[in-house]
Length: 175
Image 1 (cartoon, rainbow, N blue to C red):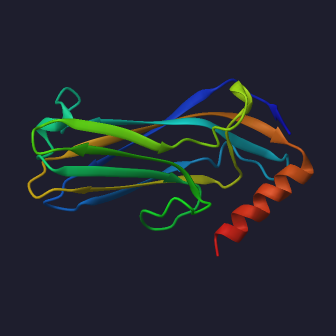
Image 2 (image 1 turned 90 degrees about the horizontal axis):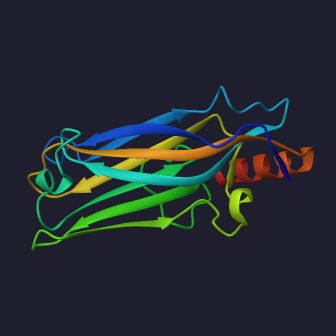
């Protein structure tokens, strides 16, 4: 289906959220240098990691988020303008961090890119020129909380049929 052109590499983006000022944030990861329609070149997303931190790199997240709060984050290959339901075809990965009333916390990544494949061959193929990161946080007195998204991916060349099928699916998901 795909021929790898590069080894795996990592793209990162950081979002800063503060519920008192603005509980949502969004960012774009530009893929224009990696995706080439003429050469049927796409990005294969192997995994996505979410790192939650306080308002500085050394401050633990539970110091910036109050008890009984949550931070939600999603990576999409189409710009939906906010968080989406799990059945949206544009959704690549999502995660959440929950803090309970006793100061305990739990983190979950409830969707990994097409993790049904075999080893290095699994992943989500992206033919769009950007990835979109959406995040929100709830809680009443939150200091700045940072979410770093790490996208592990590689550049691949797809067959003409596969590239067209992915492009058509992406276009259909846009409607």
